[in-house]
Structures are given as C-alpha cells and as structure tokens.
Length: 138
Image (cartoon, rainbow, N blue to C red; front, side, top):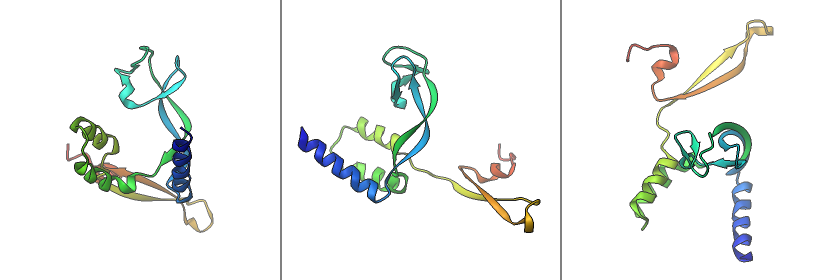
C-alpha cells in the first residue's frame, strides 16, 4: 500500500532529523546459508531456527534507533496496552533497563607534551568495584 510506505518513510525521516535514527557498525547474528541477519529469538542453541545452520557473529553497519534514553518510559507504558502478556514480556526483555554505573577513565600519555589527558575510556557495569580490580565481593 503506497500510503503505508509514504507514512513510514515520513516517520523515519522525522526520527533521522531529530538524531534518533543513525547508522553504526554493530555485531549481529548472521546466518551464512540464508545470508541474513537474525534476531536473538531466531537463534536456537547457536543455530538458525529456519535451517539449523550454525550462526556466526558478524560486524555490519546497521540502522539504529536511540531507544535507551526512553527505555524506562517504553517499559512502564507497556502496562497500559491491551496486548497479550507474552508479547509485553518479550517487549520488556527486548527493551531492557540499563541499570548500573557509568565510569569514565581518563587515559594519560606521559610521552605527549604536557602529559595531558588525550583519551578517555567509558565503562558501564553493574558492579563498579570490579572495574577497579576488586573481586572481594564474590
């Protein structure tokens, strides 16, 4: 239906204009036989559910949507939908809440003039102590 395509393309352009849709390299589940990307739900015991072919991880550039900023709202609003509970559970699992701590590590280059900070490494984790090598909590 041309009307459907028209409005889905219009909506995508709005996401793109607002910076909510972007392209980035990412690891995907790849079926070598079908030459296609598979959702996690389509991989059963490391194999493609369609043909049983072993699935590999492959890095490709994909269109992505910035939904993590809205994850809490998306999950919370599922309760108001008249959807089957199994669908809502699948959506909750797919969206996921990012709970943890973001730690920013400065990386200094002592050989550079002034020895100033040149790089930074970010780490997101559920247990910040392990980021510093503390394993006493285990």
